[in-house]
Amino acid sequence: MNKQNQKKSGMPIAIIAIVLLLVVGGGIYLVTTGKQGTPPKANTSTSNAAKTPGIPANAPLGAQPPNQAGSPTASVTVEEFADFQCGSCAAANPIMSEIKSTYGSRIRFIFRNYPLSIPAHDKAYDAAVTAEAAGMQGKFWEMQNQLFTNQQNWTSNPNYKQLWNEYAQKLGLDLAKLQSDIAGIAAKGRVDADLQRGRALNVNSTPTVYINGVSVPFTEMKVESLKRIIDAELEKAASTAPAAKPAAENTNK
Image (cartoon, rainbow, N blue to C red; front, side):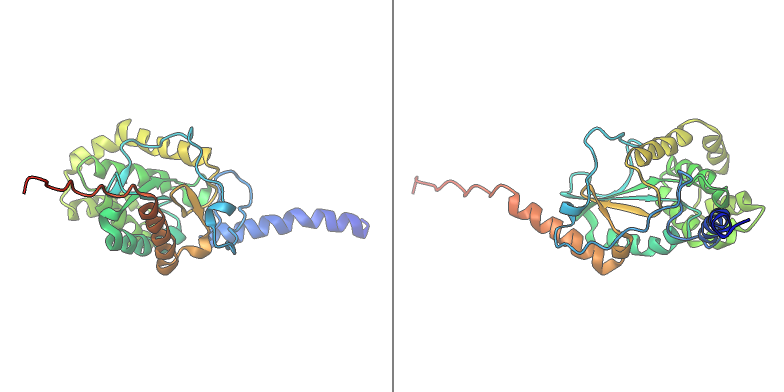
């Protein structure tokens, strides 16, 4: 075999090694398409919207109503696509919780289930369905937090569903109803709707976050960076809002 052929035959092995490293390490750029994800590039422009395409108006809506916090009429929408078996998503959860707590009704925060279709995330879809089933008892956010906080425990445990039941009991959920909803079509339908939306937007890694329809580079997934972007959007919305009409003067004096 000549040197040129040796180089060619060695390339697929190197690519496979890189992909395995990313998967086993629970890395950031885990993809659903089977292609190697492209790391998001830091936006060097002061105008994030000018560099990143927004969400098309005809994109699938995802689960309706979505899992959301804050105000549905807020001028700023933060939309996160995440996978419960993704280590980077678990690391981002406290950041997102702080954003929700800091801004409250000034923003609309939407969580989208986006379980990745890769062997290393074999429990991700079931985890998303379980969170949706908990949501049918008004406990989506609580179960979401349990799954992310305890991720390392259940992902490596063959009896992971028993652990999920323990989380449910801790949250005061009706276990019989939870199991019924997990087995039903409604919870799965919500997960599938979120997946459909994410795929239409070409989401290929988790977590992926949009702020007012603009994708946030992973390098900006820090509290202060997200606050800067959100504050700029709030300021923009305030500057374009119609001025309040002055009260009519009372002439009957």
